[in-house]
Image 1 (cartoon, one colour):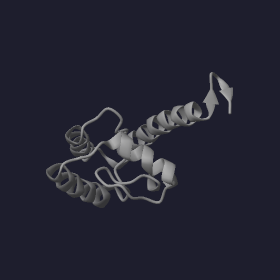
Image 2 (cartoon, helix red, strand yellow):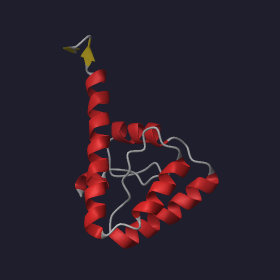
Image 3 (cartoon, rainbow, N blue to C red):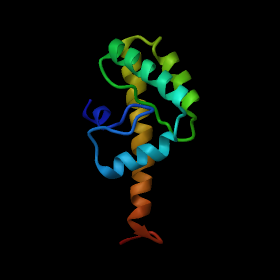
Image 4 (tube, rainbow, N blue to C red):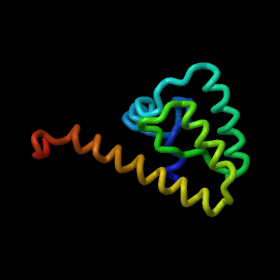
Length: 112
């Protein structure tokens, strides 16, 4: 749950996270237009009301509208299924960020 809490909501840019994590999130999410932001805000609120935590999705390579469609679909999950899906999404995000971190801390395969 602490890992989930360190993410900004989809369509937003703030969370309890490091500056590097927020920068990576912004790059992964892209920039939604105002209509997408409004729809994501409503979807995020519905998700949080239903499951008691923020919506987690691996946003890399997805448009805001694709993420909204995923959110809508996952609202249909039962709580146990959704927790497993959220954990899988967190795993994917962590794997991507570990690769980014490793790439920024190595030079031709050697640690800086």
